[in-house]
Length: 381
Image (cartoon, rainbow, N blue to C red; front, top):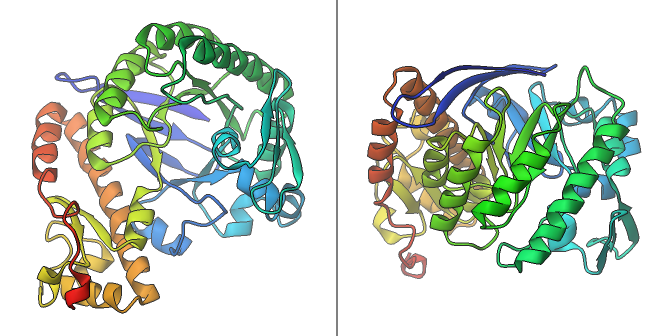
């Protein structure tokens, strides 16, 4: 993987970059839809590609349980298995182990846990996590890390930092694919700026990593805390390598953290919210269950040129939501993904023009409207 950073916005730390992987080259800042189980829920790979998705996320934990790395390898790797022509970043699965596993034990060797599917015993250590991701054929692999709650005691967080650093060294030693698989290390430190700075110095000293991630945020702390810590951490990371903020977030989160110098993002929100009847738009989030859209002939977002907004009215999408038709989730998910990708395109254009700070301020102001926080009146349909 090769990375180039072309320019920085004069009024912020926002960066315009380019990442070249084995499968595709794409510009940053870039949002990655989440395809946890080798699919972005409800969306065809063709539609993702047509709406400017060039890299998406898969999950090592889920794929190791079902269908398993050997089947994926036998089927020609994850790209061929899921019919995807772009790049794939695979999370190490550490967060899912901590959040989903019924019983788990963490020590310096790794994590022993029970599958959330059938309770079967499982063990993840740095060596296995790398072997799994290499079997998948990931373009970008994530090192195994320990992700403590953001509210954990400082000593608990410091212990996780040390373990994450040692596990990264083992991941680096275990990798056998260098030309076609990049490896990113992960910075922990909770919401403590001094611990974040300390761990950046440790993790980013591993020059064999092709990029670095900020982990352990958007796990329950208020958005303002996440923005503060990300804005403190990102500028401390190497300027010549990608910076990835894991599991974030809303359009406002993305715009704020791009301004802090973050390059890559992922989040389930576009598709998860779409499956629940919600649309992200340039004027805020909208709840299509609301009766106000019963006879609304406007598109979901008049400023959007995605297939959904070119073709269907709010009234039709609301009808699908109320009728619990499968197409409702598909259309809203596709629009939301397209909206996120177009927001990233606008951000890149603003950085290139040297006006990102003004663009982000105006975009965030428009996003403050919307009706997603209102109670739906679907029962009155």
